[in-house]
Image (cartoon, rainbow, N blue to C red; front, side, top):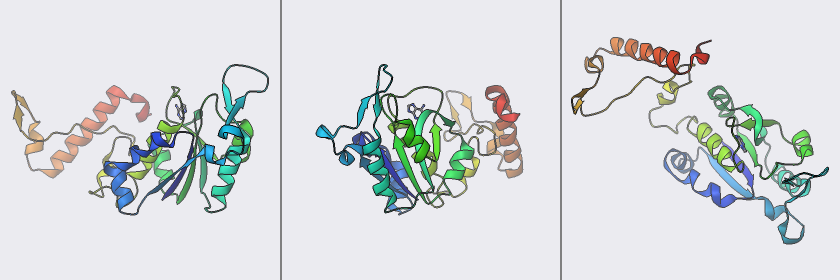
Length: 224
Ligand code: ADE
């Protein structure tokens, strides 16, 4: 999978993709993330990328021209399956969307700032608008990082244990069951006995019951 990201803050996105699972995905050639500084596509003095909004009101708006330059010059080199705009008024990201998007070959992501991007970009270039939750970030970069992380770990071959993403929370609309590791007893706090039984059937049943109980208690909406 190839992901191009248009941003005014490429520095903010350098680190998240250079560690752990996403680094492994890149090292294995399964994921390529390229950052593009929007200011490089501005032909205006001081590499201007934003301007006052028509009709008045506080807050700047990201202008058409640099964004269109950036999008079209990237589109000239790559055919994108989706042009994604990260925005709090987009569709809320969930595991189902992450699963679907992880099957795509090429994605272009646009990070907004200030009051957002000129609406005409959304009308004429953006194919998908995604929010990572009902709260407002100061820019789309951290949302893009969240989305790339959620997709990257789903790419076949990225996780060591091929099956482990299958048992994530949400993968079957259930939260994940509790997990334990050594020692078996710590300050008198014991690991549930069934996990020590060696009986895989019993363990699977226990995990499923725990997942259902946890989902019922914390996220009953998922069970509807
Ligand atoms: N940009 C600002 N807030 C955001 C959010 N919640 N999701 C995606 N992009 C954003």
